[in-house]
Each structure stands twice: as C-alpha cells, then as structure tokens.
Length: 108
Image (cartoon, rainbow, N blue to C red):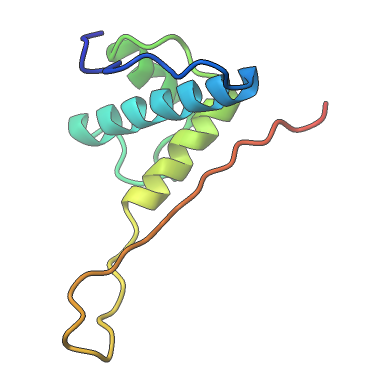
C-alpha cells in the first residue's frame, strides 16, 4: 500500500459500523479498479467470488468476504452503466448522478 491509498486518517467520533462500511467500500473500489485495469472482468456477471478473491490477492488486499464481493459487483455495475440518452434541452451538457450504496448486514 502506498500513502496515496490512505491520504488522510478517518475522522474521530464515527460509530464503528461507519468505519467498517467506509473501509469495505474503499476496498471494493480498489478491487474493482484492479479488475478493470487488468481486464479480469468487464461486467459484474464475469466477476465471480473466485475472480474477485484472486484479484484481491494480486493487488495486495486481504481476502474479501462475500459481502465485499457483492459490493465489488455493485461497483462494477455502477461504473459500467451505459450512458444516459441526451435530454431535450441542448443547453444542458452536464448531468450529475448521485449514487448511494448502503451496506446492510443480513440477520443470520
């Protein structure tokens, strides 16, 4: 890991679950980036748990859980969305999309 992977420490005072969710999301983004850069998976259908775990080992991450693997697939789906059709207004050139990913722990 380089210092660019962790540019600043996490803020103090967050609940423990928020730290875990943030770190899980950061790990999922790093793994999804590795999958795309290496050409190991171009869609979430190609990103099986086995492929994701192998990619995590290649890029120096600990073995991801099933929840993290599912989050990697969700990130790939979001990154590889087809472009939206142009709007009726020709003056509008920029579109913004806000995506929130919520990780919920399923009750066992």
